[in-house]
Amino acid sequence: MKKYIFLVFSMITMSTLAQQNLTPETLWQLGRVTPLGISKDGKLLVYKVGTPSVEENKINSKYYSVPVGGGNATLLEKIDGLIADKSVSPNGQEYISVEQVKVEKVLGSDLYPKLSKTTAQIYTGLDYRHWDTWNDGTHNHLFVGLLAKENEKVLAPIDIMPNEPYDSPQKPFGGDEDYVWSPDGTKIIYVCKKKAGTAYATSTNTDLYEYDLATKTTKNLTESNLGYDTHPTFSPKGDLSWLQMKRDGFEADKNDIIVRHRGLDINLTVGWDGTVDSFTWSNDGKKVYFIAPIKGTKQLFEVNFPGLTKIVVRVTQLTDGDFDVNAVVGFSGTSVLVTRNDMNRAPEVYSYDLVKKTWKQITKVNDEAYAKISASKTEKRWVTTTDGKKMLVWVILPPNFDKTKKYPALLYCQGGPQSALTQSYSFRWNFQLMASQGYIIVAPNRRGMPGHGTAWNEQISGDWGGQVMDDYLAAIDDVAKESYVDKTRLGAVGASYGGYSVFQLAGIHKNRFKTFISHCGIFNTESMYGTTEEVFFTNWDSGGAYWEKDNATAQKTYNEFNPIKLINNWNTPILIIQGGKDYRVPIGQGQEAFQAAQLKGIKSKFLLFPDENHWVLKPQNALVWQKEFFGWLKETL
Image (tube, rainbow, N blue to C red; front, side, top):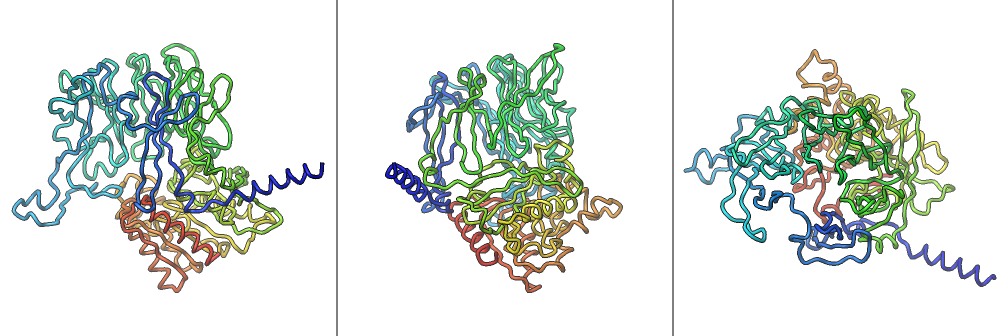
């Protein structure tokens, strides 16, 4: 008996020793799973795995298939014809392609052909640059062409947006979700914001347009709606459906599912206090499945489609747990295939049985790697805010956490600002990786996050430095009461609006924090308004322009809630990170903050990535980011 106990103890010890804490190098060896769809015969899941190559400084991709019910994966040399191609019409006779078309003359060489070596760029309106690219006069246009046998493309395709200075798919992130064939193959419905220059930069009003192949005419299907209309999809019964936001300029407005049925637009989620990420119709057309944030996670929901009957529309949450469901891949029998992840595991494809309510993992790309990595423990904590509300806070504990010890803690400030903080898995802001370096992570679902009702989400607009800052401080103060938290070693980190939060906290924290890290953060709300490219965002969230002296909300943003105005309170070491091609939060924001810190004699460092935008996408840059991030924490915390 003693030998048996010793053997079991030895096996447990060996198993524990075999696991290692997550490192940046290990993180950048993990495969990144992207499902492409279910094969035409319904038997196979087809997916892509991207694997970072640090040596080549890029991500290489391979394609695989696996039975929809699970099993061994098969490496594919090609996927042509294996899954349905949504660019091909339902009758198989036409196809849609996307091409860049030169529409506007904005380059000096366009306007002065004899001066071919000029580098001048000439603009008469805003939208002269977007995200990380300067406008050179080219736009995404949809073309339609004829197909011969075996999908061979023949004849010159026709531009369905001739001479229009607009984009479809939408720049910079639009893809094939921006267009769809009508069920009879006679029309194309596409998303476009048909505004140019300053009007484009100050509006979110995308519409759905219908192009008739026979008449070569286009009509606006959603002209009466002033906000975003996106993701056109037809139900199995032929009804057009899409996602819709109502208010122009509010990029984080409530996103609803709209169905156009017999000439009437039916809002399926109008009575539900949440916002939809994405949706998919059931095969019989009686239900819509959708993904939405809810209480610090993302889950699968369903809503019935009653048509014009008097049947009550009901939204039902189908999944629940400390994980995120990110996308619906397809259906197999009574099961739905989805991508799922949590703070300890990158996304994989799972099957969820809608009848039995059971899960089965289908892809297992990173199982072998995770078997060797120690997991962090994540806990939900409910903190009372200064205005008496209950706020969900994720607390991520280091692997092999020992409550008798003391650990430094990091307040994580989420970006967005209206961006859900859920069980997400990032390859940069990775909570498991941070915790694996010996830090407790405090991640509050502060004001301005979807998943807690629309009022909670909207409260941040015009109040960037108000209740949200109290939410942050309430979260870190509550967790810091625990005996295992070293109150003398607290830090605050974040990117984008989270970076702004760090700058703002640096001026109001009253010596709570020992160090700060701000990535692509807004330091000066006035110069941000004057240099950012999507002006609709600053108009809405800042309350207006800085010159509107009679606008109380705007003046609060540019004075009381402006980090540059609090620079005399700064007294804490700070690492400032900036992308040189970030036009959302331009480089001057990081430069201004670093220059102020240096001239005030505050210990500070400026980490610049000249070829990165709002994110850090290249593997070697990402590893430098991690090394500098944790090196700074080790040095200052």
